[in-house]
Length: 390
Ligand code: COS
Image 1 (tube, rainbow, N blue to C red):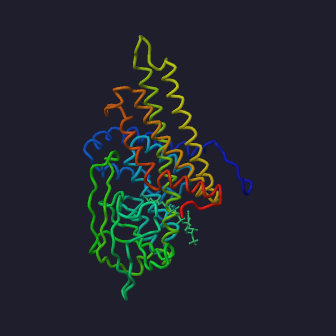
Image 2 (image 1 turned 180 degrees about the vertical axis):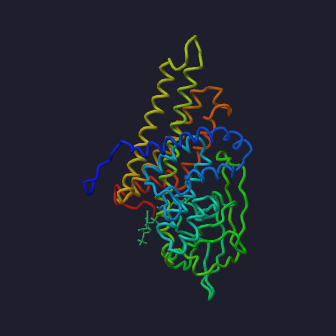
Image 3 (image 1 turned 120 degrees about the horizontal axis):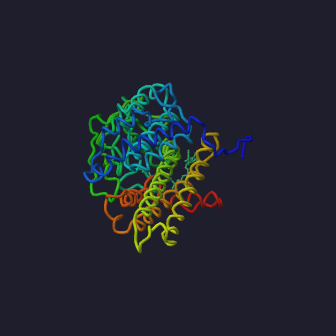
């Protein structure tokens, strides 16, 4: 503990109210549409607009730029509720808020903030985060996209892979290498309007889950941007990416708490209704074992997220604690969803119940925004002082 700050498990009245609003929105607006969107692989832009209208895109952005100015604890509560209803919509919230908006808030100049944040918060513009490439995943510093200085600004060439909202975004944060010899210290981050000449995208289909989410490959073919598109300094790009992921991993983790809670809720309800051997299956010890395991994982994941949020809200270093929350919550979501299907038996294998979707949607969370293995290496490095990544 620093500065005499203490973790308070009580939510404030405002936090309770926002959580109730988010819960209500999730139940009334998202849940009724999620199965159809999932079945039809539909990116529901109307629902995205509703998320924006209620203030859930860019909630942590200061009010002067169109956000709600809430703290991370409150943001996490919103993300949990959205994630309980639909991970595809939760991905929209996470990418827009954590990867895009929080980067501009922290690293953008006044002009860039004025240009993009109000539009991102109202949903007038979606944003995407162009870090991962076809050949560059965990080794994020090894960017193959190149940015070359010209008299008029910069020319960018390269490709980006697995980019959420890449087909709908109006602005892309594009990470590009300016001088390969400088390695990660040569990377720059650009705010690239997606209607720039030479910028194109292609949808990626055939995903296991997140079928209601838009996923794209981006192509940058001699894309010209002015100097004003550069965010912070040349060479700050890697730090921008890592700090964005500090926020993004928290958001993914909070969404996974929502998946875990959704599995508990669905499993408790189903097991009390479903009868076998003349008794509700909830009365069987082996079913209660599965439910108890889900409950414990849910609570533990939530508390790890709240700890990470508290560190962020009190301005303390939190990269390791965010990785701990991300690792635990994402693995917990996969385990809870798997247990949820087991509690539901054959009924859990079809989409009349949410658990099969939870399982498919949870699976990507141990991959994106840093695999579980990357989180372990970050945690292991912090614990031992030895970098096992080189
Ligand atoms: N915030 C700000 N700066 C950070 C930071 C953070 N959270 N973490 C690291 N940095 C800075 C460091 O301070 C260091 O700065 P200097 O160059 O001034 O020394 C620089 O970034 C390099 O840091 P580090 O040595 O930790 O980098 P590594 O090359 O060891 O990082 C990992 C390797 C694996 C941690 C990183 O590449 C990573 O997170 N990979 C996963 C990428 C990922 O999550 N991809 C998913 C994309 S979104 S779907």
